[in-house]
Length: 199
Image (tube, rainbow, N blue to C red):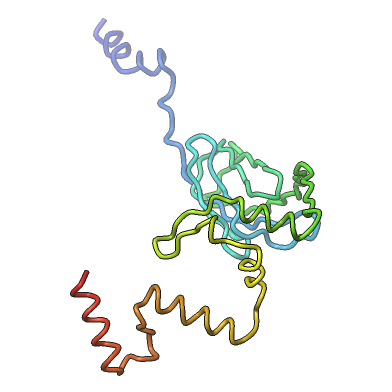
C-alpha cells in the first residue's frame, strides 16, 4: 500500500500533465536583404518579429542580425519594395541561422496632377497682388502702395541688385553685424552692444 502511495505521489503529475515543456531556445538569425530585379543589397530595410513588433534595420549593405525563437515570423518592409515574410523553422537545432531574403520592387501609382500656366504675365501679376501676404514684422504688405511696376522689379537679377538686397537683409536682421566679416570691427561691436542694451 505504501509503495502504491509513493508511486502515485511521484508519478501522478507526469501522467496527468505530461512532460514539463522545455524552455524555448533563443537563436540568432543573420542575413542579407537583396532587391529581386538586380540582386543588389537593399539598405535600411525594416526587419521585425510579428509576435511582438520588435526588430531592427539593415545597414547600408543590406546586412541584419536579430534574436528569434523557433516558429517566429519575420516581416521585411520598406517603401518601394513589397513586404515579405520568413518563418523560422520549428525543427531547427542550430543556435544560429543565415538567411538571404529577396524582396521584389513595388510600383506605386499616384493620381495625375495637371499643372497649367496662367494665360498671360498680366494675369499672374494680378493674382500676386490679390494674395493676402502676412506681415513679417519689418515690411508690411500694402495693396494700396503695390503696383505692377514694383513687382516687375522683382525680375531684376543683376549682380548689383543681388548685392543691394543682401545688404538690406543684413541690415534688417543683423543690425549691420556680419559674422566673420567685422569680427574685429570696434564700431560694429559698439552698435551690437547698444542694440542688446535697448532690447
